[in-house]
Image (tube, rainbow, N blue to C red; front, side):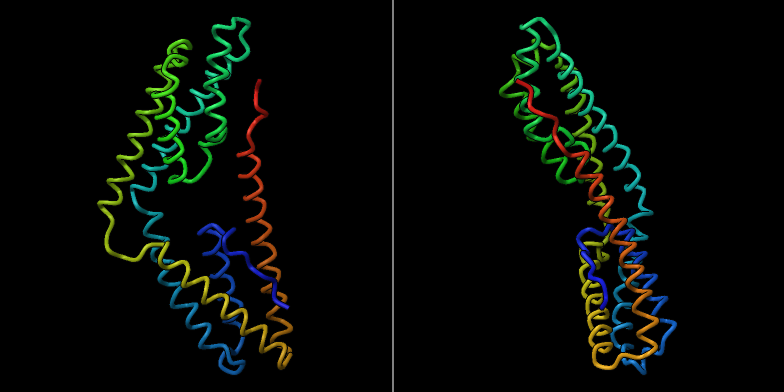
Length: 242
């Protein structure tokens, strides 16, 4: 039996490598005789479209620039968060209480808000900045954290400007969002048909092919799950301070 694949856990890089290696396994067998050629051809067609989009988006100058600006806003968020947290340890109640109030808001939006996807982080930070400015101005002033908040606001606006510019410069060519689902579906069809044919008429070819596929799938999913676990652990919020 062929191992199942949770495609939602796979990054674009992992999916690319998985399909590429699966193709190499199928190239070693007579897909016309099995018959699996039609399904392999479909995977190849969608893999080529996905691969071109993957390569184009990775080589775009905006990819590196967005990563840089995202890193800068991450640092600004962490700086504000840690600065405010430090005041919660002060003996002076005039410092500790405002810091506790502000830190509670930051935790509500996410202690590790810097470590999520671009779109989600943008939404979180916009809402956080808005709330701190409109509802916690007194506390921010008491902590002398205005400059920290302004740096986060500036970093956020800079990232959004670069993101907007990259979208305006985008071509009408297919995106990963458009090409990836078709590739995933083609892979599901190929593996499902391989499993059905093996059940109907097990032979030496399947006895060699399926273990290779399972070993690859198991290795890929282990890598994907490990990455997901690391992200989840980084997003765990610290205990709420009283």
